[in-house]
Length: 426
Image (cartoon, rainbow, N blue to C red; front, side, top):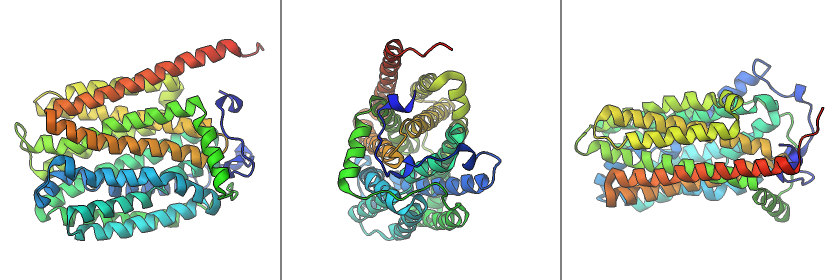
């Protein structure tokens, strides 16, 4: 699809509207690419480790404060909700002050709050700190994808974003595994403190490694310009479909991983906290599926890759209904693989579709994505409280059906557009 057919913003002065020659941007094997990839990988690790640091610990938090799963789940929903609310304003700041500057400041604030979280005196205070932490982390996702879109050659963009998403999966996995084992010995407060220290190290390494941007031009902070850019992105049917797909995939993922700890610590499994934390090693599957998303799109096309991701996720949900641990684990593997592949495909498609105002386009995607996470965490916990694991799976299946429906509508829209505007014969 050509830029003209996407409906993307054409605002003069947006940072991503500056024309650049492809051979001046980074490419795999070229100067600075490895440093850039590793720096953003570490940023992804820190972001997800902090953002979901309490998720594997929810049974312990419930016990400590004497609350139900639906109340403890707010320690996750508040963080992802804060990120969803602030990702668009933070992306505007990155257009004015630069991607690297905003990402560095965001990580600095988030890790500082992360060191305060273990000392929260009540559930309410914990939820507030987590909301502030999520708002601070909002400067990372949209700024990172905009940085990549400006500094990496287009043909390498899906792979580069896939590596950033892979860092997310490693952060999510390591955060949950580490907190599980640490909490089993010393409690949930020490566990989240360890994650805070880990994130400090990632933040320092990120700032030292990330190359200075060469293709960024400061844009405007004028509210009218920002509002017009957002309106134009929301008027683009393809972008809106991608936003909805990201939200629905994350609804599944947020619901499953918020509740799975409760399910595995209860009968018939009755697993200890350390073993429950180790279950999150299946995130390694997400690392692989996200980093290979580019090849998947190359073979199946974007919509084919989304169908495959949705089918894999749905199969995993149904397998997880079994009362035998191996089948539950296999289900989690498929859910994780499908989610990360779908997320990498959708997020990279947003960056390709928006030819200007990329930070805002990515911010809208991230906002929808984390609204999906908050919705999944809250609704999944409520469904578990009322209907057990089958209730949580039901919420996930409905979300996957939504992904398939939207992708089908997108396929039909593309066919109609192709008939109206056929490609010229050569």
